Image (cartoon, rainbow, N blue to C red):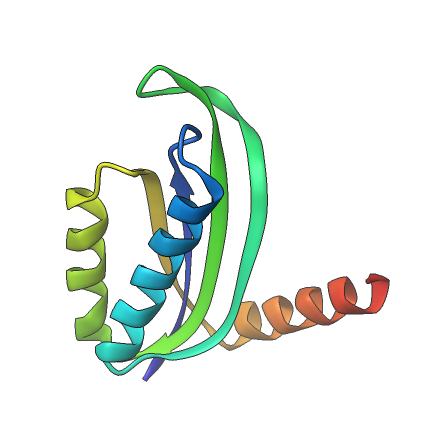
Length: 112
């Protein structure tokens, strides 16, 4: 199993309930494909560097998870089909990136 991070941007016109429902849908999708969720973060509404679909902001979310490689393609296909999704990016973390992600998350928790 490889470790991955997925960052995705949701449409800013969605309600809080719709955002929570969408995030839960994709979390359950990953778990059903054999993934183990390590962390998920809600980064909130952020201004975009450039307009996407005539929108200037979006709701950012991050998933950190371990999953078999064959589960990524169905996830990204589901992202492409979902009209609530504006952009997404999934990257596989090597051991150094995974260590950095864990360190970053622990620093954030210490500040809170």
